[in-house]
Image (cartoon, rainbow, N blue to C red):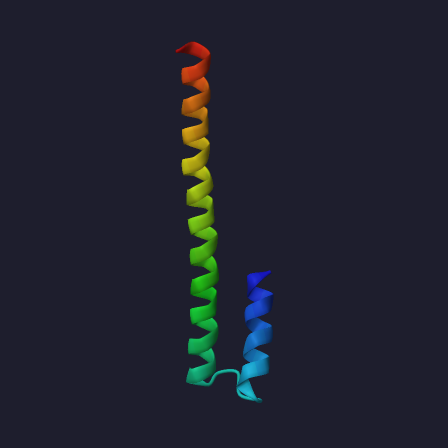
Length: 62
């Protein structure tokens, strides 16, 4: 899905030249931002799940 969005953004920003450096830079920065947000969200969910599991286990067995 992100690749499709990147391709569409390149077509929209390029004005006929999808290989221009400004277009490549803009779309690559957008992709890096999107992937970074995705990774941060996954990391936050993992940390939260561990904390909730630890709390649940300590209440059950502690």
